[in-house]
Length: 82
Image (cartoon, rainbow, N blue to C red; front, side):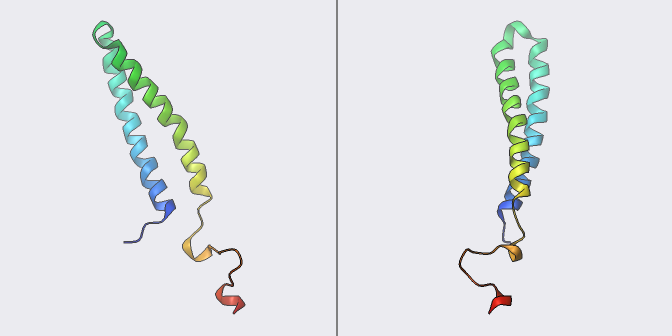
C-alpha cells in the first residue's frame, strides 16, 4: 500500500486526537489527587495544550496536499502537453 503525505497527516491527526483525549482524562484524574500528582497533571495539561495547537497546523498542511495525479513537477511536461 502506498501512503501519501496526506494519508500520513490524516493518520497522525487521528492518533493525536486520541492521545489528547487520553491525556485530558489523565490530567483530570491527577487533578483529583493534587498533592500526590501535581507535576504529572501539569505535564499532561502541557502535552494536551501542545497537541491541541499542533492539530490545526497539521489540518492546514493536509489541505495543501494534492492528489497524486494532480502533482506537477516544475519544468516537466504533463501527459497532456506531450
